[in-house]
Image 1: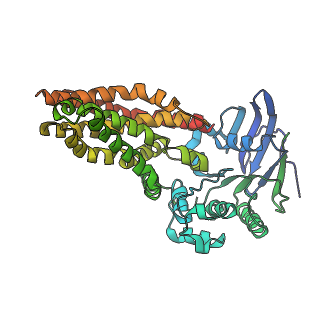
Image 2: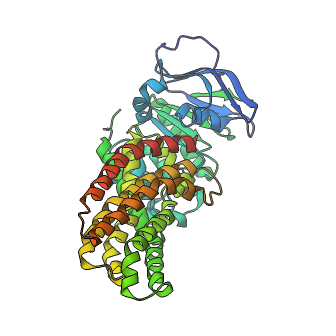
Image 3: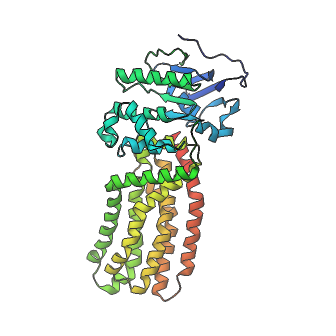
Length: 218
Length: 229
């Protein structure tokens, strides 16, 4: 099931490698989170980042997304540094963090309308379809503060169904989901990998996806 | 990519619409600063003197100071909720220039907190016995000044949004930048009262507005990146 994705062949231009990190180093409060971290993420690959609490999983994901710039090393998107092509990189990236980006006063449909239209044009039909698939059929018009944590998580996961982004970066997407939701999310991740997209995910959950590789921190 | 990427103007409009929608749903955010403004202004005739001569003298200053305080009260809403629910990160990860998205948020903030104050100001000016000829100048100066306060305040809020307890730090950062607006705003009204043309002061405010529209969102965007880091 697992093949360790790492080791430093410095041929960043090789075919099918979407994201490659070389010699990543990050330190927080005088504690080294990781150093000399190398890995490649290929098209069609699901990379699960593992590690104990506080080992820097979230930090690593935020660094890869460009939300955190306190690191040293190089991160390349199809062979080019991400800073040099930020707009193109952001257009192909979908990030869902701990804070899922769902406004509590808005309804699921209003939330999705906004968060999706930051990247691509979406129709209301698409949004309704996605909400139905994640099991929020009767909740489209309820304000999100009336929804449970798991349902709010589902609102953010509906974005996965709409998004054409090639790279998904998901931070603990399974935490508040029920068993059915977990199974559904796994199949969504698998579909993304089959379609040639990639996923980078942190979770303590045992994933059963054929395209899975593991990256261990700390 | 199978689907079409949105244009920057579509993302701008989506952000503007969303913020207006949130403000509309959370009516407190609109009503509180507005009520605060009206209450503060109404206290002056009671506390100082109901004589119109004395009120006329202080009218412009009272209104402008109350506007400044009300705008500081409303600033906090600008990024706080977005920071807490993660929408801010989504904004930062948009392929569109953050400048325009921040500008959209600032415009929405002004529409919700600044514009109502401008619209109600003639009524309060009447209460403070401001002579008729100064109404137009007052409204014009507020129309130019309140967006500057929103834009400049946005920088301070963006810088402090990641801090847990902010207390007065917001006011300490914002006030020095807002004082020039206060000075020119009141001077414009005073000069009308002294039968001079207020155009000089108003055009200075217009310049300040153009500078803040073009530069403040850049600073806010940079500050947001630091805060989210």
